[in-house]
Image (cartoon, rainbow, N blue to C red; front, side, top):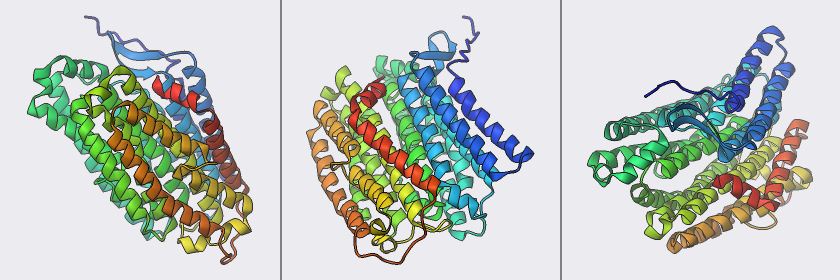
Length: 487
C-alpha cells in the first residue's frame, strides 16, 4: 500500500490565512511598533480568514492529508461555518479590545498575536479528521487563552484565573489523550470515520471494558472544555478574573471549539449507545445547575458565565437523544447534529453582543462589576442598552430575539424527532427558569438611573451593532444555518 499523501492547498487556505495573520502581527509589532497598525493587521487577517473560509466552503467538500480513504483534514460546509464564525468572533473581540489596549496595561503585540494563534486553532478544528489533529487544533485554540487571561499587568484576579484555567485544561487534555491512546490500542486507528466504522462493525471490540473506559475518558476530557456540569467549576472564576474582551472570547470561541470537538467524536467516531446516555445526563445537569446558580448571581460576568454553562446544556441535549434506538435513524441523527451546531452559532453571536454591551457600559480597564452597576444603563445609553436587552432576550429564547427563539425551537424539535420527549420537557422547564435572571437584568438596565458612566468607545459600539445585526439576520435565515450545520 502506498503511503504517499496528497496535499490540497486550497482546502488549507483558511488555515494559511489564520496562521499568516499571527506571523504578520509579530512582524508589524516588531518593525512598525505602532499599536494601531498591529491591531489593523490582526483585524484584516481575521476578516480575510472569514472570507477565505466562506469561499473555500462554497466549492464543496475538500480532503487533504489522505492515505487511502482516511483523511486527516476534511473541509466542507460545517468546517467552513465553524472557521468563519471563529474568525468573525476574533474580529469582534479585537473591536471590543480597543479601550482595554489604550489603557496600557496589556502589550498590544502579544495580545493580537495570541488572539491570532487561538483563531488558527479554531479554524483547523472544524476540519479535523482524526483524533490527533482534533486535539492539537483544540489545544492551539486553548493554549493562547491561558496567557490572555493573565496578561493584564498588576492583576491578581487575572493571574488566579489563568492558573485555574491552565490546571483544569491540562487535566482535561491529559484525559482526552489517554482516551485517544486507549481507543488506538483497541481499534488500531485514530481517523474518526475509520474509528466509527470499526466500533460499529465489531460488537466484540465495542463491548470491551477498555473501549468503554476509552470512550468515557474522551467524553469527560471534552466536557471539561465545554464547561459541562460537573466539570464546570473553573468557568465562572476564570471569566470573572479575565479582561472583559478575553472573557467574551472564552465564552464564545473557546466554547464553540469544545462543542465542535465533542460533536466530531460523537457523530463520527464513538458509539451512540455509550455516549448517548452520558451526554443526556450531562445535558440535564448542565442546563439545570447553570440556570439555578445563575439565579443567585449578583456580578454581571458571573451571571453570564453561569448562563453560558446552562446554554452548553441546551447544545448537548440533542446529542443525548441519540441514546434511544429510535433516535439513531439517519434523519434523526442529522437533525440532532444540525440542531446542536445551529444552536451553538446563534448562542455565540448573542453572547458576543451581550459581552460587547458590558464592555461598553463599564470602565475601559475595569471588570464586569455588579448588576447594580448597570442600573439605568439603558436610559443613559439607549442604543447600547437596547442591544444588550435584545441579546439577553434572545438568549432567553423570547421574541423579538428570533435567533434565540429559533435555536430553542430547533433543539426541541430535534429531541421530539429522536423520541426524547422527556429531555425536550427538561429543556422547556429550564428555558422558563432562565427567563427569571435574563429578564431581571433587562429590568435593571431600564430601572431608575445609577451613577453616570463614560461614553462607550466607537469600536465597541460598532461591535455591538454588528453582533446584534448578525444575530437578527440569522434569526430571519435559520434554514441556511441548519443546512450548513447538517453537512
